[in-house]
Amino acid sequence: MKTLELKGSLRTDLGKKATKALRRAELVPCELYGGEENIHFSVSEKDLNKLLFTPEVFIIKFDIDGKVFTSVMREVQFHPVNDKALHVDFFQVTEDKAFEVEVPVKVEGFAEGVKAGGKLAVNLRKLKVKAFMKDLPEALPIDVTNLGLSKSIQVGALSFENLELLNAKSAVVVQVKLTRAARAAAMAAQGK
Image (cartoon, rainbow, N blue to C red; front, top):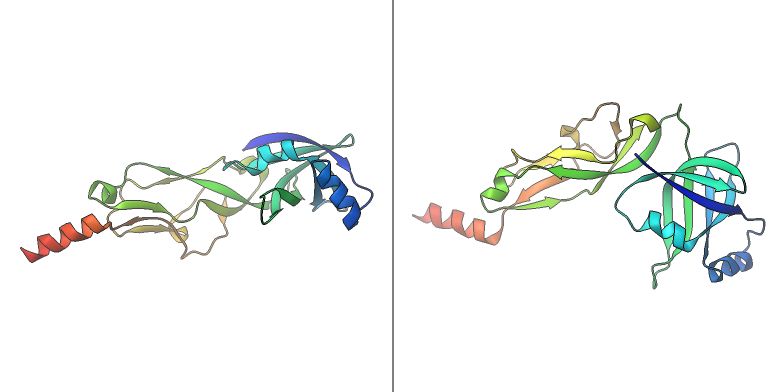
């Protein structure tokens, strides 16, 4: 899994007034939990956008006033109008303890159902997994070559080495949908 390094600075004032002042200075208030104690800090909005606006998932190494912490992003709160990050929660991780994170799905192959006129739909772009840091892949490859018309791949049908999938087993990850043209062709073939 890719690693991103960010610098942060500790926050001493945690009130509304201090938070608004941070945001005016183009800093985003953050919280790191999962360690011995919660750490309140702020990160430059510009640096944080590299992490927020990408489909990839990163292990983040924070340098907060000289101390280095390894973490994953848990939750982001966005402004409802301008889509700026208002607050970000991070979870501290270690090499020896399994943790939960969402990993992107990577579709591989050309589905038979698409060749027959269907449309490939990816319903889940990320899957929630539990694993150790050393076992985390950058993406979860899903082969759709043998997927026919109106067929789907559910979470329960997938398995990855050293990863535990946490999504519902019945959740559909990828499916080939019938298009109107394919449906019309099938109706015409039945009518003859």
